[in-house]
Image (cartoon, rainbow, N blue to C red; front, side):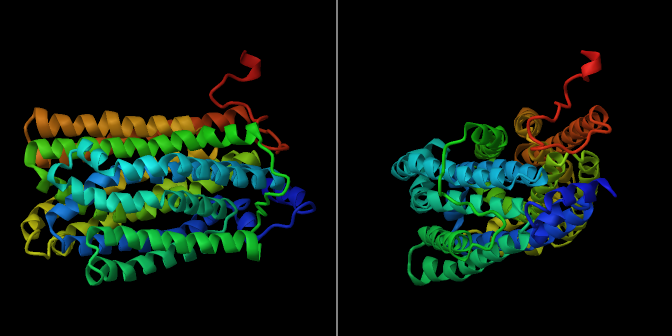
Length: 490
């Protein structure tokens, strides 16, 4: 009997598997494909909403587009908190399910909800009250008022933003990516419908875009609560009965969650730095170009992000079951899949750069931005393929509980490679706005290669140090640190 079959058989008598949990414990290639497909569909639809949102906001003029660009870094911080704690929850839950510890997985899910609710209580009021000063601090200038109108509504929904991220994370951790797709898709469709109504028909302007997001998050939260606590048909029960604080669970979650949250913070810091450099060399129109073009770039890399998200669950289950060879398979397969998809997207983006740019500059007030947006997209086509090695490698680290490794990869990618390259090419060598774009590409290439090589070394060493190890109890604490020397050498 194979190692996989042995491990599944050991779990079955105590806790019958759902299809999702069985998928996580099976072949990693199959799991990545089947988990990624629904997530790609859902994330593409969400990104379609982001692009549609930008199209509607573009009708309000370049100032409105730039205003959202100045709030986006802080919004990414909030997303990072939810997604980071969610990554920690996914990692812990998947590892414990891989080790047949269903009760431990339940506790991790409940603790994740407690953490994000506490964070929302701390953050909502100050962000709401100081939205305009924050926008000014980020360089919004004359667009600070518009940025604050948008930001106050978004910040008021902080608890919904964080809660939905955790709900998605719990479903992904138990291999239920289809249900995650359903709620994410419903949220996107509702947003697409509400945007023109609230922005133009109701006369709310830029705030209408934020209200559409808030209403859709409330709808998603209601559905998640219904599934978890009314219908109760998820694999995890997430019961609050007899809840008691478990320091070990929290620490295990935060080992991944805090570094993952900081990764989003690094992205926000990078966005602030890029905005500052663009303003210094080309003015606020350059920020509007970057904001519009970056929405397309985010859309283009969504399949890679979805693959990486799936890798966290697959790697966590393999690590919890101590089936370390699956980590190598998952890393190589997911990276190759991501690069292949990115190359296809790059070709399409390059061919249709000008029509895509026109979508974001159809209004008379922003028509002059179209050629620059098209030029930005043509440069970013080189950026896309090198995103996959970095994202997948970070997901391997997160899935195995090494969140700090993933943080270091992103620290080098964003603040060492990309920021420095953009500064050198755009400002020091005086290539201006275009030099900053190329700096982003150069930094991405260096960061992707660095992340992939480190993750490959980590996985190979983990396999060597644990060659012949049998699956064990929790799969969490008793697994040797792969970066340490074998006992015989100490």
